[in-house]
Image (cartoon, rainbow, N blue to C red):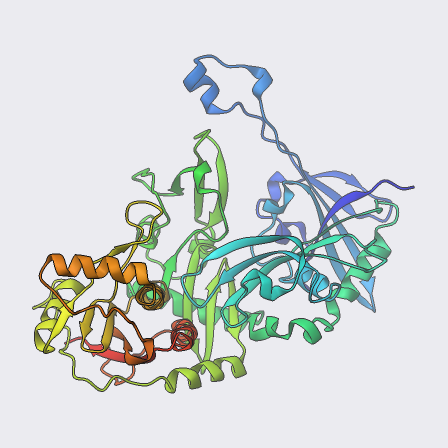
Length: 522
């Protein structure tokens, strides 16, 4: 019986075939071997080094502790149905050798979704494009349905999936797919061609739409002209310092305990940062930002906490960009160096839901920069204009889990209205507001939490604020957004609309009424 091998397979995008176009640093990639069919096998010389802590802590070197990483790529050019397609099989740490936007997106993801049943999922990697770009990996001990992962088909983008296949050609093995397709099978260099052709045909199927149709709510943008126009919009927003729709973040799930700091290539201050800050990255550019190519050549490095000479992760600044852009009536988001378009029916449904959210008709004072230094000052001023209202945002209720782990009952309680207020600062900040409102609603329904709040208020002479018997349907939740736009309905990014619609539905399910309010800035 043939031995099994772990295969990691990528598909190179059409029109890309030259070594210089495929690899990030082609001069550092050398030919290891050429197969009988002229398929090249490339390798990048291993970087052998001794961890810095050997010298810094033990005060002397030791050659036995030297480390090296092997990196090998096999490129297979196959004719499939009359067209040439190049596959890249990687070994060791070779996935880091490719240029951005060279590999076909969702190649492995579609193979897996076309090969497994709806209840055969074991692990998923997802990014929440509708909120704060939260990324997470979730795994269950047995094959399960997508619903058991807490996956929200309206807000979450599936990046990778692992599942058990019953496909005989895949030897009924565990499949993992994202841009990469990975599995363990009885294949080697002598019988890989027909296997790659089968993988390609599986990728081109659309049977996944019968079980995972929602995967197309959010799709990759491949048109170069569209990408160019979107990138131009991003440059414009950055130069205008409009960081409410463009910002930077770590583009993948990382182990923060292993990271000491972040460093920016070309940063003359050589500062070590605790996170990735867009203003610091832009300040490190030698020239004014005019093209995204300036960001694709700038590197952000995550430095190891165990060896400060070692970069655990390296990304281009462009891959760290997050953006939300409207173009020609469509909504797009940039995440991990790739643009996504929101399916028009999905966008229309979300916009309709948002337009149907009830508006709060009460009059709130405007936010004035001259009068109010921050939200707290505004809240105090608003409370003074709302008769019989009470400031509650400082009466935080601890919920366990350490210092700072607590809940705000609301910002202002006004008769039967619980008002939550925050300034529009993009999807990330608004997500915090929406989540605060939902968690607060749950807190009010909890007897122990209400008792804690009642005791705090009565210590300051505030009686009869918290009812002994709480009925959610007696209360309105007002989500108020301080906005530079003076529309009656808050103007917020599309992905914030996704989140607030989801949140409003969840709050209404608890029995409350939900209304939204725009607070204009003067």
